[in-house]
Length: 432
Image (cartoon, rainbow, N blue to C red):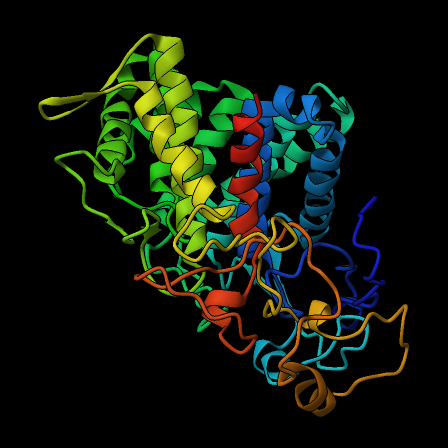
C-alpha cells in the first residue's frame, strides 16, 4: 500500500500462518493491534460509498488515488479472509491479551490467534457486512479495474448467500464489537448494496419484502446500518422505483429526528452544538449523521424536493447547515477551540490513545519495548506522543463539551477507522 505514515513499519507479517491461511494486511480497528473484520468491513463500505458519491470531489482534491488505495488495502484483506463458500476469518489477535499490552505493532508478541465463522458457527452480522463492503467496492472499481471489480462482486454474492442461508448472531468478538442491533440491518444493508451493484430484481424484492426489521432510527454506526439502508434506497425511489416508498419515508424521518430545529428531534446536542449519542467514540455518530445528511440532501436536490417534518419544511441548505456545523466543530469551532483531528489547526489532541503513535518510532529507536515497558515508559508518560497521527479523529468530547487530553481516557482519545471513514467523504463533499 502506498501509505504516507512514514514513522510506521511492517507488522503482523505472519498473521494466519498458524491456521494455514494468509491473513497479512488489512487494518487494526483503533489504537490497539487486533484486526476485527466487522468494523474493518464497515470502514470499507463507508469509504466506498463516499467515493461513489463524491469521486469527482476526491479527484479535484488530488486524493482519489489515495482513497482507492485505502479501499483496496481493505478489500484485498477481506478477499483473503473469505477463504471458502461458508468460511470467513473474522479476527486476528487475542483481544484480551492485546489490550493488556502497550506495544508498537512492529514489536507485538501477543498471540495472533485467528478466528473464523462458518456454517457450523455462523455470524451473520460480520459476513453480511463484508458482503456489503465488497459489493460497494465493486462499484468503485468497475470503471477502474474491471477484472478486480468482478472478483469483488463474485465474493460479495457468495457471502450474501452464506449470510442469508446461515442466519445467526455472532458473539465471538464480545465484549468488543458486540452487535446490539442484531443482524437484520446487515442483511438489508448487504442486499441494498448488491442491488446497486447488480441491478438484480432478486435483491430489490429482498429489501421490499423483508419484514423482520423495519423502523426509523436516529443513529448510524458500525453496529446499526438501518438508516444507511433507508437513505441508500431512497435514491432509488427518487429515480422511479415506487415500491421503495417506505424506505424514502423512513429516511425523511431519520433526518427529522436529527435536525436541531425539527419538532421531531429525538437526539441530544452538546451546548456547543455537537451531536452526542453516548460516551466512547462519540464522534463516529456525528460522522455518520453528517455523511447521511449530506448524501440525502444531495438526493433531495437532484429530485427537486424538500424535507417536511410534520409542519416544518427544510431545504437542502438547511440540512447542509447541520453537516457544516458538525464538521466545523470537529475542526475547532467549539467551546474548547480544539480541533479533534490530530495535526489540524493550532490546537489538537497531543496524546491520542494509540500504541504506535505513543511509542517512539521503530525507525528512530529499534529497541524492543515489552508490554510492561510500553505501559511504564510510554503509556503513563504525561507528554505529547512522539509520533503525530495526522488526520486521525479521536473519540471526542463529553456531553458538556468537555475534553481531557490524557492518553488513558480511551473514550475521548482513541481514534478508529470507522470514525474517519464517513468524515473523509463529508470533507470531500464540502470542498468548493
